[in-house]
Length: 431
Image (cartoon, rainbow, N blue to C red; front, side, top):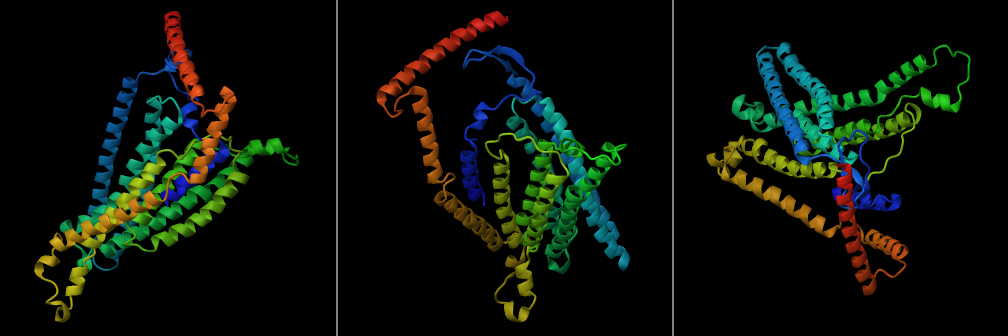
C-alpha cells in the first residue's frame, strides 16, 4: 500500500510542480527570529537558535510523557472498574462489563480532543520556521499520544490480562474481540457524528446568525460564500489524517481478533468520502490552495504501524490465541500430539512460531519494496527532462557539456565567495 502511494505521490508532484517544494518553502507567519545575513546568498533572513528550540521540544516531550502516564492510570482504573462490576451476578455483571467498554471509548475520544489542543499550544512555542516543520512536530506528538490512548487497552487484554485477571474459555481472544468491536464501532460512529452530523447543525446555526434581519432579501454569491463556515485547512487535515491513521491501526494490528474491522472501516470510509465532499462544497467557505511536496511524516507513521501490526498479529497468534489448549481439549485424539511444555504460554514452539512468522512477513515486505520502486521510471525520466530544460534555459547551453560544468562550478564558487563577503558586510551593518 505504501509503495503504491509513493508512486502516486511522485506522479502528483510532477503534475502539480511540487517536486523540491520544501527546499523553497516560505517562513511561517508566526515564526520569530533575529535578523541576520544568510550564509547562502548574503541577504537578511530571520534566524532562531537551534538550542532554544531544543529546550522547547524537551519541555513538550516531558509533558507528553506525563500525559501518557495519565492515560495508563485511567486505563488501569477502568479495568479495575470492570473487574468490580463483573463480580455482580446476572444482568448487572453483563451490563457492567459492556458499560466499562463504552466508558473506555468515551475516554479515548475526550483525551484525544484535550491532548490535541495541548499539543498545538506547545508546538507553537517551539517556533518552527516552516509549515512543514511545524506540522511534522505536531503530528509526532499527536500520533504517539493517540496510539497509546487508543491501543493500550487492547494490548493489556492481549498480553497481560491472562496473567493478572485470567481469561474465559482458556483464551482472552473473546474478550479482545468484544472490546475491540464495541470501541471500534463507537469510534466510527463518533467520527461520523463529529464530521458529518455536527457540521450541518453548525452551518445552519451560523447561517441563521449571519442572515438575521435579511428576511426576504436575495443574497449575492459573494454574500452566500461569506455565510458559510470558515475552513481551518491545517487543523481539519491533521484531524482527518489522525483519525484515518488510528483507524488503520485498529484494522491492521488486531485483525486476528476482529476480522470484521476492515469491512466496517471500508464501508465507513465510503460514506465519509461522500459526506466530506458535500461538507466542503456546501457547508464551508472555499479552501485556499497551498502547496505541499508530500504528506510528510505520515508516511513514516504508516510504515511504523504496518511493522507493529506484523509483530502484534504474530504475538496474538503465537501466545494469545490458545490453539494448543483448544486442540488438547479433546484428549482422546491429541494426547500424544501435545505435551505440557507446549501448552505453556512461553513454550519454545510458540516462540519459534512467533519469530518465523514475523520474519517471513518482513522478508516478503522487503522483497516487494525492492521490486516496486518508489518513483516509477517514466516519472524519473520526466523529472530529469525538466532539470535538463531548466538548466538549458538558465545557462543557454547543453547541461551535459563538460565545459558548461566547469563554467557552472566557477560561477557557483564565485557566487559563494561573494555571498560570504556580502554576508560579512551585512552582519557589520546589522550590528
